[in-house]
Structures are given as structure tokens and as C-alpha cells.
Image (cartoon, rainbow, N blue to C red; front, side, top):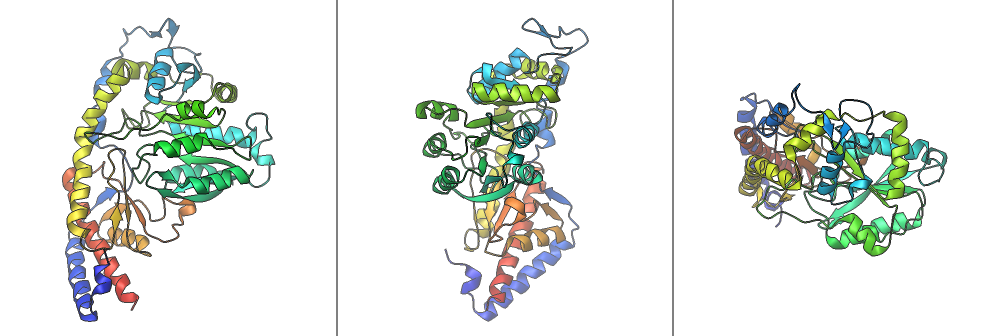
Amino acid sequence: MPNMYEAMTDAELDAAIAELEAEADKVRALNLKLDMARGKPSPEQTALSKPMLDLLTSETDLTDEGVAVDNYGLPDGIPSARKLAAQILGVDAANVIVNGSSSLNLMHDTVCHAFLHGIGGEKPWSQQGEVKFLCPAPGYDRHFTVTQSFGIKNIPVPMTADGPDMDVVREYVENDPAVKGIWCVPMYANPTGITYSDETVRAFAALKPAAPDFRVFWDNAYCVHTFAEEGDTLLNIFDALAEAGADNLVYEFGSTAKVTFPSSGIAFMTASPADMAEIRSAFSVMRVGPEKIGQLAHVKFLRDLDGVHEHMKKHAAVVGPRFALVQEKLSAGLAETGVATWTEPRGGYFVSFDGPEGSAKAIVALMAELGVKLTGAGATWPYGEDPKDTNIRIAPTFPTLEELGQALDVFVIAVKLVSARLAKASR
């Protein structure tokens, strides 16, 4: 659909801008203070897990399958928590560690190990000259920040409806030994909400890296976060690796950060037996043992994978209407303008929005003027550099439905006004 502002006469465009500026002035006078910047669970969602706090008391038997939970030891996590994590990821519990509350921390420490000590007997990345990491974009800003913090060169890779552009990935991975990894959120990706197709997963498993110490960082953060009646399915990357006869290629991560309590959940990772042996050895230097009482509480509360799915249905009842409201407001306000596109995910925490080229920073700035905080424009690209300045990540979970509706109404005005101003400036 053509951009309606570009199709207007000068007089029509001037009138449209004047009308939109008047609407913006009315919003500005309301002195709104709304936050739609980060993908945080709402208080309604965290309240769903409060009964977990009642499951451990001073009378609770603090053992798990015959081993002590209230003392040092069990560096891989308590047995029942490892089994639960293995069910969530669909892997063998023998290859799972449960450690800490943040999967991002596990990812950071894994990159740190590779950078300082090396992977699979290879030299540390820090001793190999320039090191590069592939970053599907738009993607997760905190991933990009981890590698950037080590001085690793982040390289954007285009995203498609099926996942990263695997022709581009393959060209880099199989021809440049300086490429040591790629960040992936394979299910309900941040921020697009897409799930990698079976073909894409198999293409990852079939990679023949030029660098023997290349690894795929498979951050399966949203694998249970479906809010639609029929959610997406993701081919198990380790099943695909087995089909391809490949090994020592993937680190997979997950957590209950948005299942129970952010920053007070449990985090876990898995990989091939050889890679996990190396990770265990590396982590043993940093950790005597994980926080295990929280692990025990999680197992008592969630029980097993069926229990996780039942709990996530409660989340879906809270989250689903918010995502439906995003689609309703954007469709009603922008569908006929031809100035924007956005994703329609069936799970996860975000909607990816694209306005006209050169619009994202102006839209985010105008929203701030009007009292609504958004994720910074460019945050979904390495180094915050969106080459076309189009992408904005919408995070609808934290505000109330009423606040979200207000914020989206303001967003529609801002998108229209910036788009109209851009059309005017191009003449």
C-alpha cells in the first residue's frame, strides 16, 4: 500500500500535519507518564507465582533425591531442577546445568570462557586477532552488548520470516574463521516474534564452520511463552544435529525469568557432552555451587513440563489481551496509511514495528515528549545502528490494559505525524 502522505497534495499534507500537531498538543497537555520500554512481566503476572513462596518453610525437608539442598555442592544444580530444565528444552538431563537466575549471565560467562581460555582445545579468542559474532537484526540488544563488551566485532545479519538469512550466515560461518558465534532467539524471537522454520533449524545443524571453535548461542528464552490458542512449534536443534551427524556446535540456554519471578527464577544451559564437560570445568572456578533453595521451590511449584504449560496458560490469559490490543490499535490507526508494518506474534514478549525510512528515532523522541517511554530506536541492531532507522520494539506486557491503550493511541499519532513530516521534507 502506498504511503498516503506522499500521495497528498501540498495543501492536503499541510492540513494533515496541522491536524496531527493539534492532536499531539492535546496529548502533551495530559502530562502522561507511561512506560513501554522493556519487556517486563506485569504485576498481574508475577502475582501468579506468589504461591511458590509458601511451599518452603522452616519445617521443609531440604533434600532432593537424597542430596542436601541447604549446603555446598551440586554444582550442576539439584537433580529435580535439572530434570525439569531438560524437559523444558527437550534434552537429556545429564547434559544440563541449572545455575543462577539469569540465562544472560550464563551466556556472558560462556563467552568469557571462550575469550579467556578457548573452546575445544583452541587458542583463547583473545589471542586470535579480530573476532567476529553474527547478530540477526532486528534482535536482542543485550546479546549484542555482551559480545561488544569483549571487543568482539558484531556483524548484523538480516532476519526473514523463517529466521536469520541462512545464505548470509553460511557465507560468513563457512568462509571466515574469525567468525566465532551467532546469537539466536529461535522461538518467538526478540523482537520480531517469529519462530525459526524447520528448514532454518536444519540449516544451522548443517553448518560446516571454518573455525573449529565456532558455536551457535541458542537462547530459547520464550519456548513456553505461547499466548495464542495454537502456538508455534520449534524443531529441536539437538535432534537436527543428530540427523546431520554434527556435534559440538550449539550452546542452548533457557530460564524461568518470565515464567515465575524475573531475577529470582532459575537459569539453565545445555550442549554436547564434550562442550558441557568443558563448561562445567570452567564454571567450577567461578562457582562453588548454585543457589539451590530457589531451585527446590521452583520444582515444588512447577513440578514438570505439564505443570509449566498449565502455569503458562495463566500468563497467556494476562498477556494475550495486551497483544490483541496492540494489533487492534495499530490496525485501526495505521493499516490504511501505508506508512508502517508490524509483526503479529503468537507468543513471546514483543511486537516488531517498522515505520518509514528515517522515522524511528523521531517517533521515539516524539513519544518521549508526549509522555510515553519506548525502547530506544536502534536498540535492536548491533551498536544501536539501525541502517534505515525504521525499527521500533513494542513491549506491551508491563502496562495495564488501560495504560497500554493510551500509549498505543499516542503511538499512532506520533507515527502519523513523523511520517507526514518526512513526506513534507522530501518535497
